Image 1 (cartoon, rainbow, N blue to C red):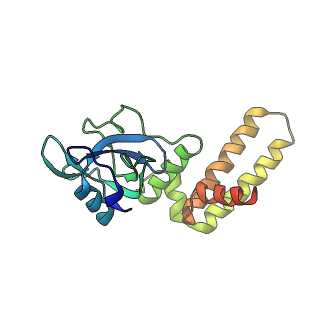
Image 2: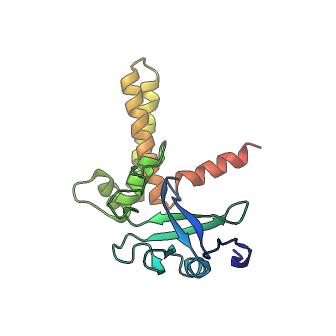
Image 3: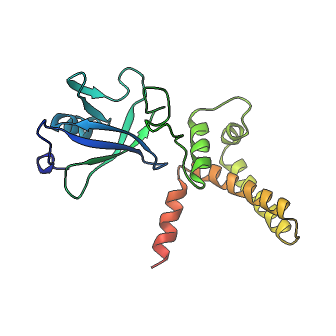
Length: 197
């Protein structure tokens, strides 16, 4: 991003919206000056200009709830920024997930994918997901196969509850397999979109 193309206001600031790159939830709004933009781009950690403190302020510098930068975009007028981020905990100083008092949960299957991804990097004793990751790729792949067969069997009957439960089991294990292989559902969606031309 060419900082010289940005249109700062009379105080040398412009608003920056922080949005979770995975869940797409808006986390907070802050202000940046040219130096804050440069630091954010260089360090890949969102840094604002604090109007109350009169200095640069890296989000999370006291709480540890950093916002790692995934991508920084400017709007069509070059006077507002959008920071796509990976948050390290709640974004709001109150302890809420967002400054708008919303839970930072993904829509659709993204909520489950987020939970599974978290469990992969933060193992928890007694967690079935943790046990699967510990047993390795062969066991996870085996479970996907087993659940697929069970879904096929249930699809031949008319018991909606059993069918939907087996569909949920298959989807869950499939998402665990994707995480174990280092992929996300979005990677599969990209392949599907490329096929649909």
